[in-house]
Image 1 (cartoon, one colour):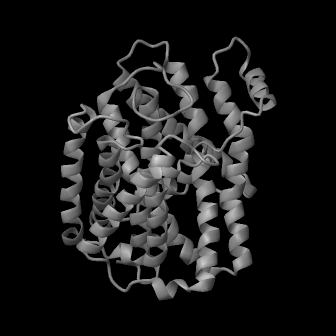
Image 2 (cartoon, one colour; image 1 turned 30 degrees about the vertical axis):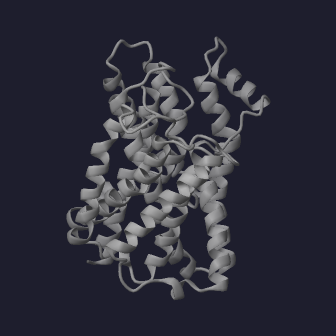
Length: 363
């Protein structure tokens, strides 16, 4: 596989994962599980959307962390440590601060039911210090992980903890079960939905593992070596795990909150997460490498704008969904239309931002 094909393979994955972020938050808007700025029916509960959110959560942010670690090592190899830190601040710190102080109060203002103009509501939210990272918690976490990587790399260089071949099935199973146990124990104190410095630490055992797995995989380009034979057993495990989800949601396996605690549902969810996520991640890496490795002008254009879509999608999604609220459409239709419109508008907004020379260094 050529370097151009390899880049196209990852470009297509970035496009899919970013669209899933939009889809995930739109699903919450119309009855899925999770927290979001605005929900059309605050108490709505739509089982298909809840399942979509659970499946998304099992892999998509962890996948982002895996790819971030994979490419961050390459970035550090091309730069001095000082230049790398400057780059991290520009790429992660600046968008995080921009969202925290500008887009966060704007998004809350868009969701705020008031006869005042959007400008007046926005200013009110700023005065009330309605600040936060929103989806840019991901940038916050990556900054922390980058500093941890630099510290670890100073003590033990990454080349010394980079395996030459992909881990076997037993190693990955041990990792999945170990992370499930750690997640369950952590969620006894910090359940899913609770935040520490805007981070839902209940999900972070898997995030940390996947980020550093990406770092370790870079030296021998291991993410390019995943084939169908390697991915298939994990895809089967993921499908079996997903098939159990409706029964779990019907409380057939026990009672108690899935978010955490000494109960069967919390145990189920803690182990279900990595057992589902591993297969989807490996399956997508294989599928995109095998079938979607051909670059196209459209995919290259879109991939260049995915980070911007990620940054801007929250206020756009809230604005579009609020605009659609008076329409008497099936919620599933709204979910699909709003998702597509938000993604498309994010591409447009990012394209306009890229006309600014300074934005090109960030986006």
